[in-house]
Length: 181
Length: 388
Image (tube, rainbow over all chains, first blue to last red; front, side, top):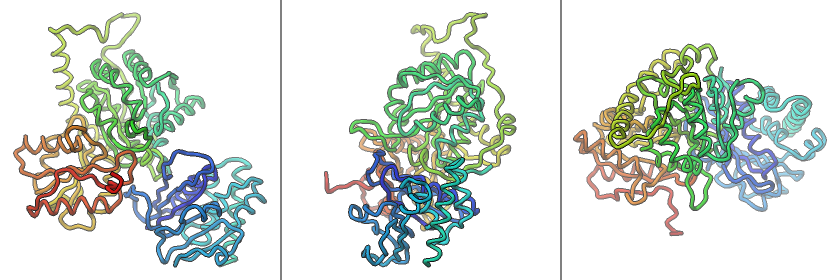
């Protein structure tokens, strides 16, 4: 079983990101689960969302404390919360940032990757909502879900031109991350 | 067809499949998405139901009572303070023997105000004459709503049914759910055809004054109906299994065959406990699915091999210094002459996460008790002792 923790701010789409990842895993024929941290929703406040991916039905309902992956949608959160908390030593952290992993200087044994998802979102969507770009980059970084499965999840969740734009954001971010690896 | 669904949407889909006639509801977190989805279905013409907007939960249940008395298949959903506000009308629904189905998205009661999950709300309504089913998964939530109408509308039962699902933990969690076809649901659930109903063409009175020479007989009949409901819940679940390939029983036994210690719980916590007990040879789990009527024989049979039972529950019966379910398990053991030691583990109140370590701690306490060590009869799991 793989466990993923998302850090975002209310309104950035962290919960949707977790849902999209779970849906993509489901389309790959795997079992998955996604849930928010159940806080009172306030725009801008730090929020958590979680996803699990496994090869059989996921029974446990507790929150995730030792994630295999951490995805940070908002770089300013690094100053506020310890995004590395509990991450496995062989885990991977993906951060939306224009900086390089070295410049961020996180104290962790886990592998750190960055992607400028805000730029991708602004270029493609015209708004700084980074969840779809981050899932695209996550797919390339982790290999847990394919580009096709993510695109299918995005098309299921959004419709019309919004779906098209978000698919583009996923593709751009996926390619950028793939080139970098 | 299998889909990724939030628990709230799984319930809304079940309501649609049951071709409900009247929905009356008032929003309350974490139940709100259920009735939002239903309202959308009605607005889009997918569900040909009357959606009644009301100003409170008391009115929501009152509207359901009126609608159900005319022979309409009715649904509502609520949580916490909403259920508490319905309290007096819950008794009217059950006393009038109306087969209303309600989903309660389990949430803690105030004060302190708290929107998160525990089961104090529906446990507090245990004596109100409603059948209560607690589900573990979103699949079971969907399936149980469909089963609930069959149970409620059965002429031998005619009691309202409450399907309890953990708020947020299920309602806001997305997981795979197999949504049955309309044809299969139609095969399983015939239209509701009451023997008596309010009809302007043939006027009659329902819910009339029950004077002292009648009142006790009404209650006795209700109590008898609860007794019959137990076997009907089993029959309906078996028939559901034959048609849909899924059945749940009134309780589920997991690894109990050689278990010296058995944990007992209700609701979604069972999933986490299953993952924990997999690491033990001599620890099993009983997940109680039907809480009212209490399947006492089934519980006694499931517990007879165990020396210690740990009851993990998300409620506290204030004044008993233990969980309400624990007291009931003790009653079952007493009535069946079991010398099983029953320990209470209070956990998950007001949304406190129940971690796998918490379950391990409960097992450790139970194991010490099994060795004859003296242990506290009630343990609060995940409690922050330092701030007390």
